Image 1 (cartoon, rainbow, N blue to C red):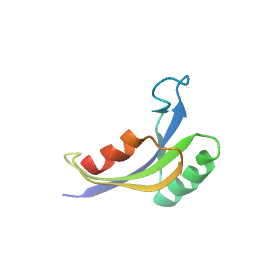
Image 2 (cartoon, one colour):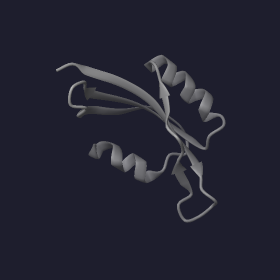
Image 3 (cartoon, helix red, strand yellow):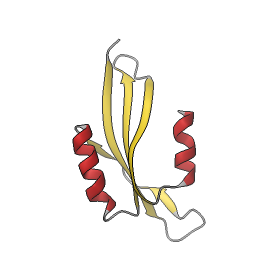
Image 4 (cartoon, rainbow, N blue to C red):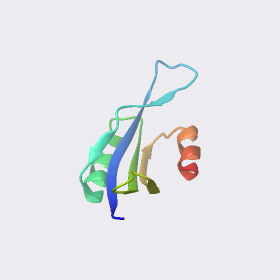
Length: 87
């Protein structure tokens, strides 16, 4: 069982100032940890919030074995923070 490391950025934006002020925007893939961290800093200057995420999954089954938030920039919704440990 080989594991695969995946890095991506999850930006958040305001959705029309409704009851749910921050909603996830389109996920941005990254090639490496270094690339993800650099892009997170850059995107954090324009987005309202960005989470840089590292996922380790089984190559054959796709089952996630680890999920880590490497960095946070700006505002991150509480619901997002609560769901990370559950995965």
